[in-house]
Image (cartoon, rainbow, N blue to C red; front, side):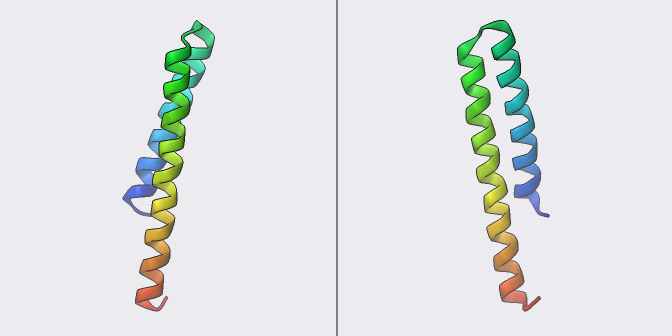
Length: 61
């Protein structure tokens, strides 16, 4: 696990909270911001996966 995984998990969690709060309060903008944050978090996690795979490949693990 690297920094990208941590960023991704945090951003996904924050996004989910925004989405739920936006949904409950009827704030569609906040709800959509939350969905976008969740996608950004997924991208950070994917980048972390690529970094881990590259590191393993070049280190021979």
